[in-house]
Image (tube, rainbow, N blue to C red; front, side):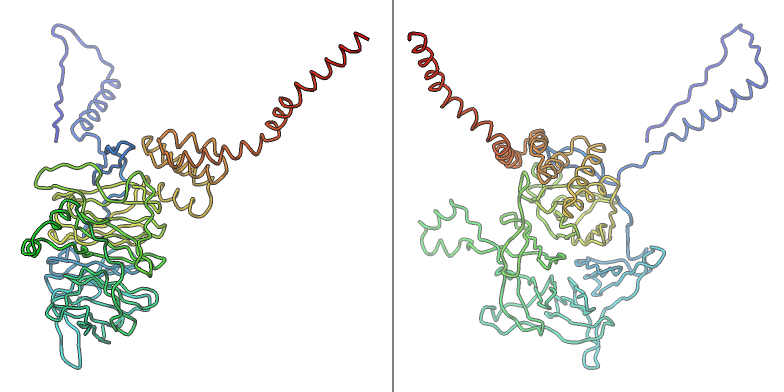
Length: 504
């Protein structure tokens, strides 16, 4: 912290001061206030984390904070033992479930009427047929809208199905299916249950996609396998290699997912951290990727990165959280950053990092949302961090909400407010252009698209403006063409008749 130095200057030697006592007293008060201000210094609220976006040239540009730390939760601060290697996080309404994997337990945290956090339950075992069955490294949990709870009890190689009071209902164990290697272990890690009661599971060492079970727990197959990424050089080398050499090479197999979440429409967001396939996808019921990618770049985290401090390579997402306005956040395990994207795949902002301060992480593990607040779990610091929207972030969300509701004029007004807070925010210009396009003001849309070099939007606006201009001015064009076609022969005819009359 910079120390301020106060210099007190005396009167000039040999000069006699004649001072009014009232003025002297007032001057003393002013000097005291000045000394206090200098010693204390101004108090500013420092941002909790570095927030940025990327411009048209894929250069990072700093922006105001969209989220700031609202709470930092440790086991000790909640009145229990500290978490140990927590791996899973789930939130339903005001209930926060932490899979405290290293301590072999589930911790249920509630929010009371005063907004304070309190532990409501700590579950380390379940009662099955009258006998206690302890949990062994539970990695994930999902609570359905009906209150049923599913736990991936990983090292016990089972999925537990409980009621809202933690009473045992049933278990799902390794399916007896030909597609599953009989010698391999069944290690469930991440789980969701859709609105129809179908269970989608990510299991360790399963690269055929998500394992799907019906509402009764019967295995029905796989869905949404990652596309195989083939390097042409490796493929060519494998083609000319001998059988013994090919046996020692890596197989061209799909990469497995590492996490999944369910959005409000029942679609599944999945992430993988291989660095080879799409880092985030949105799957429909058929397992097809329907994620919209209309931004400058695909949703893949950092666009510009280097190698420093032992951190290298592209972003690798460890989890995703889908918000109510169809935007979604992705948690990068490489640099500890949270990337927020809108429903079109545009990067709204990124924040966070690797470090030992609040708002930063050492080993990202899971991400969830409560309303528009984000909860991030770190498995190394064993802490749960809550991020709350700032005014800047709320203004961006409001603009997106208005646009999706069809209130395009109001959406443009919200984007104008965002521009007042951040004049370099490209998406605000694009948002105003998009709203103008929906309103039929194609010239305005072209203007704002051109400002931020959004070629796709500009091309569409120009096409519609050209069509509109043609429809409005077609009669003028036809009139001019008619004059050009009919005018010369008519004038020539009139001149000819006039000449004949004159000669007659």
